[in-house]
Image (cartoon, rainbow, N blue to C red; front, top):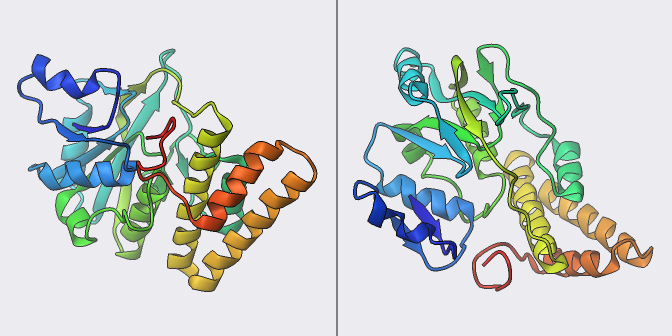
Length: 260
C-alpha cells in the first residue's frame, strides 16, 4: 500500500495488518508516482492498480490471473465494476482523440464511458486494472514525468495497443466501488486538479500527434479559461486555472492546500 501523505490514519494500517507492506510518502506527489512506488516494490508476476474505494470479491483476482495466463496476446485486464446497489458502472471508452481530451479538460471530468461488453477494451477508468509486470517494466513504468493525477493509465492502455497486445474484459467476476470520489471543494483546489488534468491531456496528445498538437490543445484551454474570466463565469476559479495552465502547474505535493 502506498500512502500519499494522508491525514486520516491510513498510514498506520500496517500496525493492524502485519502482512501489509506500507510505503509512506510525506505529501501527495500525484497518483502516478504513488503507483510507480508500489509497482517497483511489488514482487508478483501481475500488478493490480486499484482505487482505494474498490473492494474485490473472493475469486476476482484469481480469475483475472487465469484469464491472462491463458492469453499470451493480452497484456492487461479489467473486470466488471458495480456500485453498492449491485448495478454495473460505465468504465470503458475509446482511446481519446483531441476533441474528447479538450472537453474532458473543460469539464474537469473523465471521458464519457460505457458499460464494458465484448472480449477486449481500448481503455478504462483506473478503478481496477491488472497488468503483466514484464509489460509495465518494459514500458519503463508509468510516465510520471508527464502525468501526475490523470491520464497515465490511459497512456498505458495506448502502449498496450501500440505493442500489438490487448486489454481483456474478464466476464463473470466483479469488484465493488463504494462512496463518492473525493474532489477538492475550494476554488484553488479545483483549479489545481483541473490544471493537472489539462497538463496530462496535453502531454498525451503530444505523445500521439506531436509537440504542436499538445501545444495547440494547451492554447485552446488557456483561451477558454481566460474567456470565462472576461465573461465573469466563476472568474476566481478560472483566473487560478489560467495561471496554473500558463505556468504548467500540476499536483506534486508542494503547493499546499487540499491536494498536498
